[in-house]
Image 1 (cartoon, rainbow, N blue to C red):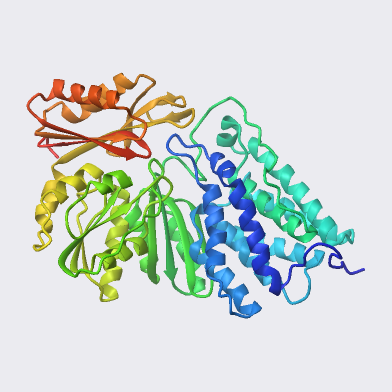
Image 2: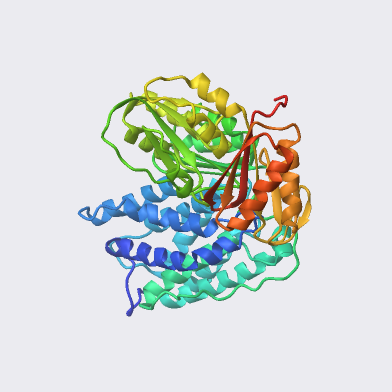
Length: 544
């Protein structure tokens, strides 16, 4: 007996694929915060839910309204691979790809469901260099098994999907006990949970039901343990992702070479376009191995300790000899920049700017030479790649000041910037004269390089490393100033976070003046989204 298509609800065919993806997008949008919170970071929360959602949204954004059904299906798959973000997003793009490969003009059946899930699982395993149990891959294994049982039992598609979603729910619950990090934190795997949300959405579409607005609750234990990121070892501090224009058969070579540089390696191919993902400490090398095999685009580098969101820029029509693109952590701080010919890329927690973002900002400056002040050390490789792309596309000459890798260093460089004269060395010298550090808040209990911390504790971060942690705000202020001002300073710039008060800023200023009474002190209400305090000291007589 051949499984039949559902008699009620909505069909899954080439003609309805966009609607199906829209249902999944709605479900992931509602579950986004919950899935994000399943990643355990000290600062900030994880982003698996965001990565899954953005992958689906990228797929939908590529669809042309006037295209035929087959073309729209191809556009969905291409958009998912191009827009996939993070380890889970890249894997989920393979789920999307598998679904598209098994949808036809005829209504989807239970046999199609089993074939789709089997293909999704195989593609996902192939994409991952080192598969790990207790993740989205495990949830896929259970989904395949349930779908095959349903086919053998001759269940129709709605009933088969109920069996599949029930099996996935059990698999997700069990992920809490598979990985040590999940067990210690008392959470299930975020990627597996996101896959569950998507499968429930597919079932809702078939049955003509509304997508559940609140997914079933995930219980958490009170035990705390190691920091948990989306996946991979804590030994690696950066997430690198890029697109690579290269033949599909180079994916395996790239996976093998990236495995030598880090973990959480995922490489997926889509007709000459590879989406590459790795956690590593060797950012340049990770990009270089891809560049050796093809053309890299949209290089993105994320620091797990401090991720910022996609920027926004404003346009101008005035052509200039020299322009500047700067990355700063808040709109309030960007509003304080009054240097002519500057485009401020405003960032917020979640994601670092991409090559495309920096190129767009450089184009808006409309200048022959554009100086890029990265504002964060993990934006430097992206800026360098943007300069190469701009050169290849015969765009403006981009000059990256790598020394301007903190907001205070950016401000110091802008203080000597000239819209008529290109002097990269001068800007680099001004930026290099800044020593910076910050105080951030832990968002949950966790283990750090300086020991265990509890949610709400204050962490002192200097040079990208946590050097102190305590619930005593005043003590951490002193530790930060110890690190920055022990040898004195001529100028101290204090950028205050959104949760500081006038009294807080006055007390901080007084603490600075006690240490360097002769220094110029500038305190700015910068409305920083993740840092409580970000301090830059200039004119410090230290050996670099």
